Image (cartoon, rainbow, N blue to C red; front, side, top):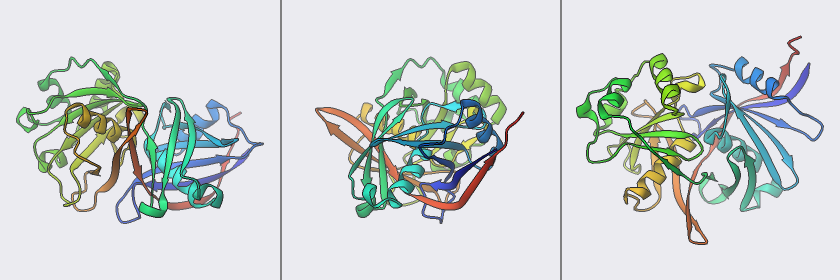
Length: 298
C-alpha cells in the first residue's frame, strides 16, 4: 500500500461557481508511480474529479502527467492550472518567480505567475496544428442534438490541435448554447471515429458584461459528458479567434451550462521572438487535502 499526498482542487473558480475538479498527487523525490498505478487511481476517482494530475519537481522544472478515468490525457489545462496555482501559493520561493517551466507530453511549457496582480496563473498552450475537417454541418448539428439553424453560419467549424484535438463549433445564441445536451455514448463513439478529443461550442452572446464569449466543452472520450472549465479547449479557441481575425485584446470566456454562475477562463496573447502563443489562466479553490491510500491490486 502506498500513502500519497492528495488534494482536490476546483480550477477556474474562487468557490462560487462549480469550477472543474482536479485530483492532484504531489510526489516527493523518493516516491514513484507506474502508469498502471496512475490509471488505477484516476479510475477509482471517476465521478469525483475529471482528471488526476501527477507532479514531481526535477531541479527547477516540474514534470506533470494526467489521467482521466479512461486513459492518459496528453495535456490537461484545468489540472495544470489547479496544480500550479496551489504550488505557487504554498511556496514562497515559487511565489516570487514570474515564470516557471513544466514538462508534459506536449513538451516544455511556461507557467506565468500573475497571482499578485490578478490572482491567476497562466499556462502557455502548445503551438496549434490546424487540421483538415471534413465534417458536414448536418453531421455536427445531429450529433450535438441541435438544429442546423442554431449554428452560426458566419463562422467556420475548425479542428485544431492545441494539446488536444478540438472541434470548434460556433453557434448563434446563448440559449442555443445552453440548451445543448448531447447523448454521451453517441458523442463518444463519434469522437473516437473522427479522432476528436473534445468538442468546443461557443457563442458571442454572454450572460456577464465582461465576458466576450460563452463556451461549453464536451469530452465523452474521457469518461464524462461535459468539462465545465477548460484550459486546453479555450486555448484552441484563442488560436481560432486569431486565425479568423477576431482577436481584439485579452479575452475572458464564461463557460459551462449554468447561465447565472459560469466559470471563467482568461486568454491572452504571448509574443516572443515574433512567435505568437495563447496563454490561458485562472485560479483554483482547494476543496479537500489529505492522504490517498493506493492498495496493491495483487
